[in-house]
Image 1 (cartoon, rainbow, N blue to C red):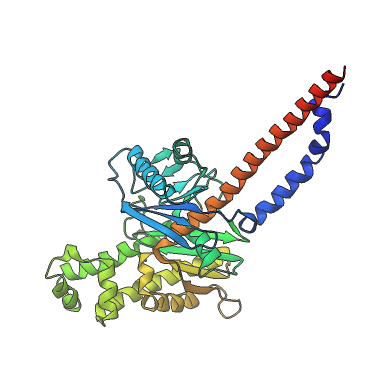
Image 2 (cartoon, rainbow, N blue to C red):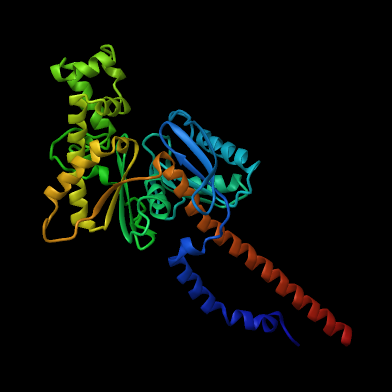
Length: 382
């Protein structure tokens, strides 16, 4: 008598080639992902931004809300994410959700190991959200998602070896090689901001001294400006007048604005930040040898006031300068939406696997129905 295994043997015999094909497709993941809309979410210390993104990186709709206070439980942030996704799902056919989190995400892209601006400590964010939403969820570091977006749709298109530097409150980063984000053994690669560049230098919130982000970041820029203003330095009179003597009102965007208007101190501060940026990039070039560095984050809005000095310092400190090809230094193109767009695009890969799994379940059911029909036919013929 025929058995279910006998009836399905031809399909089973093709299992190994199919698995090998899937493995090949993983290496060409962005080319084979389904062209379906997905939601990307960028979670920072001050805002949660969510948007529906199509397969070409276009934002169909975007929502933004404040990040719940970090003293609140992780569930409060999860509730905010769920509300945004459900709101967008009312108007769009959403197939997956991607999360770009400002923190360390494990290699399985499930747990947020540590988020400095949120109360997430070894938090199983992916599983918690997947249990509350009806679509698959992917979680990654926000710098990784931003780098992916720039590689797919922005300044890094066509590059095989790309490093992204995100300059904000601190410094984040990501590495892309041959269409793959390099996350490291434990998922926390790319924390470039905590390379020590000045032994015994400024204290960093991470606990060490002399970290790169203490010399080239939004915090470093504001710290230097406030110190000069607090000391009533003659070079700081312009910015002191601008804030009417309230030193604590000095911000990074304000410094950039005054620099564009010609304030000499603000221009000099951005040059200092840019020079330290170039020193760190030269170190990364010695270690990673990429073809392109993409500079993103809020501080990159200063454009050539920052990136010009960075290029000069990079060329001056590059190991083997004059005898090796130099990587390009370019400003990111996608702006503050890069993390959200990248998270949505990475989620499209999860949507593909989800759709394949669903298709396999349907195929198994159809094969069982054929088997059951064959059994009924055999019984009827007896």
